[in-house]
Length: 304
Ligand SMILES: [Zn+2]
Image (cartoon, helix red, strand yellow):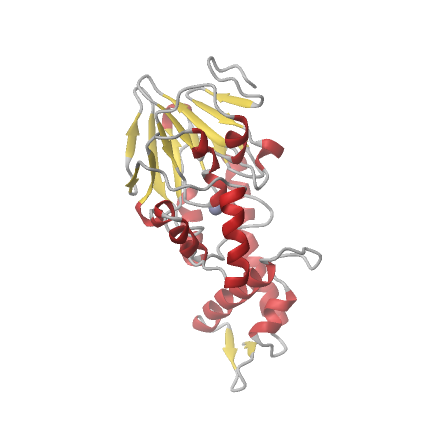
């Protein structure tokens, strides 16, 4: 199962034929991640060069880099690949133009943003690549005997994509990470509705191996994948169910955020309050729109 692909010197590499999973530190737990190397006759492509790639380096040639989306943890390894052409979906291109461009994708409040900017520069080695171009849905990269097909799956970011490598029966899922935490759709560049549509689209992915950048690593077997995709989608359903219960008493937006429907109460990170507020706003907007929640004259919300 491990480290038996010729020419790939990597402590924990999983060989799936033309695809090699370069397992990140802590099995790809953030801030690390699992990068994917795809080897064709003519080209080697590295997908999502992780922080582990940045720290460890690479012992094989890389001709092109593909990004599932533009987020700080998916591109630190570019620091080891100067001059290598980078490709991302057109909707995320702004994140590769400058740090300011990248920050517009997150949409953080100023107090958190200042600190995060420094982290992106110091801990994730962010630098805009000199040579980058964009692709759109259904683009196929021909590596020589091996292809990478782009499946646009927005929601996490506007330009998030899944990559399918038919010759290896593998789909790389990026940050559709199938974790118990559920989908992350709290950035300025995120969309809950699009994320749900993208999860639906993933149900028809034709593959036997499914690779996530974080947490779950490699899932082999379609049935297992589909069950995990259901669990992942259900995190959203359960969140709204819990909110509707909470809103049997009228509550304000701030009360919903303070109750925490995303993170557990003991989690202490600087961005938690911001994410809880975003999440509460997103779900209240949607549930008011579809008639599950009503807004009272005093501004509070109540389930119908
Ligand atoms: Zn991401």
